[in-house]
Amino acid sequence: MKNIVFVLILVLVSCKPAQTLPDPLEAGWEGKKVCEVLSETKQQRILKCTFPPNVGHQKHYHKPHFGYTLAGSTFQITDSKGTRNVPVTTGVNWSNDQLSEHEVLNVGDSTAVFLIVEPK
Image (cartoon, rainbow, N blue to C red; front, side, top):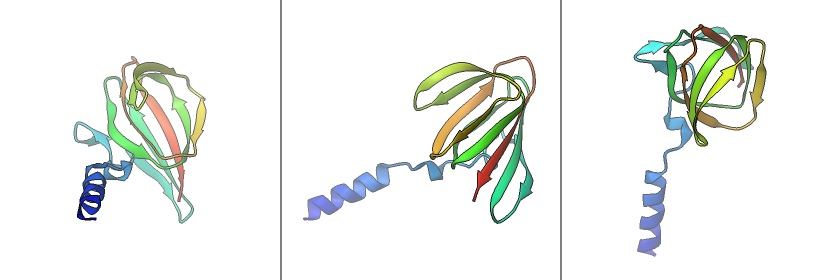
């Protein structure tokens, strides 16, 4: 019985849940914030995140959310699927209904701007 309890404690301690990572607002790049709160209510939070060329977003987690691209660019995205470059077009929207985590870097030549809407 002691061995089972020890193994369970070891597993729990060694697991790194996404919540130990910063959320999009807390995460920044090289010590500087990239997101700002545009609106926050009891129901939702709306962030505006701005990425000039060669600026990214340190590894962070997202709760389920909706996103909209105000200005696009090309991003290097690193997540559980690996690292890849993805062109992100102005006007594109997406939604994610699960907890996710990633790190991004604007490898394009234009400033990208996103709106992130997070239900609470």
